[in-house]
Image 1 (cartoon, rainbow, N blue to C red):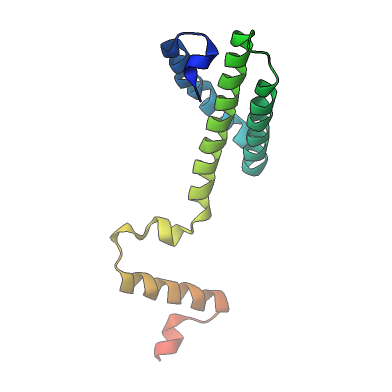
Image 2 (image 1 turned 180 degrees about the horizontal axis):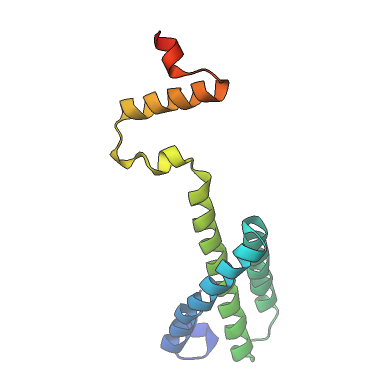
Length: 128
C-alpha cells in the first residue's frame, strides 16, 4: 500500500494503521465468543475484500474517505489474522501441544496407549 497516495502525512496514516489493530483485536475476540470462529474469519475476510474493492471506485479527490476505507479494510484483515492465529492452535491435538518435555519414545508409547484405549484394550493385558 502506498501511503503517500492518501494525501495525508505518511506518519499519521501509519499511526492510524497501527492504532486500528487494538479495536480489531477486541472486536475479533468478542465476535469469536458469540458467533464462532469460522463465521468470524469468513465475515472479516469478506468485509476486508469489500473495503478494498469499494476503495477502487472512490474518486481520488476524497482522500479522507479512501484513508478510512483502507484503515477499516486493514482492521478487518487484522481481525481475521487474529482469529486464524487462535483457531490453528486449537486444531493441533493436546499431545502435540504438550510434547515439550517428552522424548520421541515416550510420545510413541503414549500414542500406543491411547490407541489401545480407544479400541477398548488395556496395555496391561498385552504384556500378560
